[in-house]
Structures are given as structure tokens and as C-alpha cells.
Picture 1 (cartoon, rainbow, N blue to C red):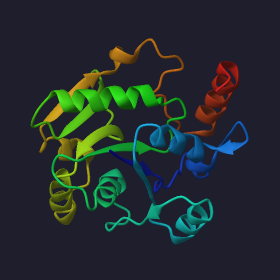
Picture 2: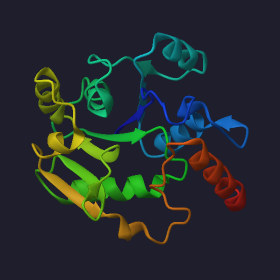
Picture 3: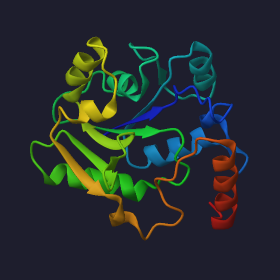
Picture 4: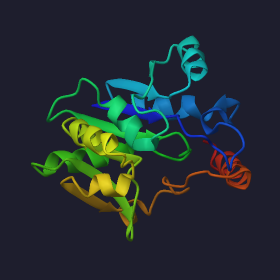
Length: 201
């Protein structure tokens, strides 16, 4: 299974790039990469900025650019799926999930394998899906390309074209801090930092 880490967001509300926010004196990016490497044989970081890719290469991280720059997570998924065939899985993860755990990704992968024909396994909170912490079949790259070429980059509409298995996040309620807790603002980061220290992550 391939891991795809998205690091192309503008981070406007945060005011600085989320993937480089320090947790335990290391950038969040490196913690998330460790999580992905625990379950994936191949991991790639997608970012459209050349300076970011150069910085990642210096850290010996495999980094690629998205073909459809500025088109959000769907463009990152499209780039990250390059070279994968039908039946090959990829785990797409955003860069702002400090409490994501490898066990959850393994569980999603198991559910993917349990349902023949499924093209994506996506956690869901009520009616809100988490498409940037989900698994995808390699064949959906063509569907993503079609959406992007038509000027449609919304993940929800993309998912509407797939055979999706939705997983209620209540399945992971025993995990604390919540694994799908993300960060959008400096206040979010401050709260996450406090939880990180409290849990001894």
C-alpha cells in the first residue's frame, strides 16, 4: 500500500505551513510520515511548491508535484496515485492530523479488503466524510483526472462517482485524543500541543 501525504495547502487561517509545526521539537510532517511508514511500503509527499519539495528532499523524503496546481486535495490524490493499478491501494492523509494512529489506517485497509469492488474507504462523522484520511483504489486516478479536467475539484462530488464504503468514526471512539482532530488556526495548534504533551506522544 502506498501512503500519500498532502502538504500543498495554503494554511491561510493558520498563518504558517501546518506540516512544519513543531511537536516534541520535530515537525508534524515527520511524525505523520512515521505513521504512514508503519503501514505503507511506499510513501510520497505531494506539494506544488518547488521550495517545499527541495526542503523535503534534504530530509530524504520523496516529494512530487501535483499536475493540477491549486486544485486542492483531489489534485494531490491524483498525483499520488501515479503508477498504481486497479487493485492497488493508497492511503491519503492530510498534514494536519497530529493524533492519527497507524492502527486506524490498518483497520481501514482491512475493511477495504473485505468488500470486493470497493473503490474507497472513507471515515465519516454523521454526514461529514473525511476524504483526506481515507483509502483509495489506484483505478480512481482516472476518475480524479476527469473531474479535474472539467474544473470540478470538490472531494464530495468526486466521492459521488465512486463505490465508497463509509466507516462511522464512532468505531474509533476509544482513541483519545480523537484521531481525526485537525488544526486550522493557531488556537487549534495550541490545543493540540497541550494534548500532545499531556498524552506524552
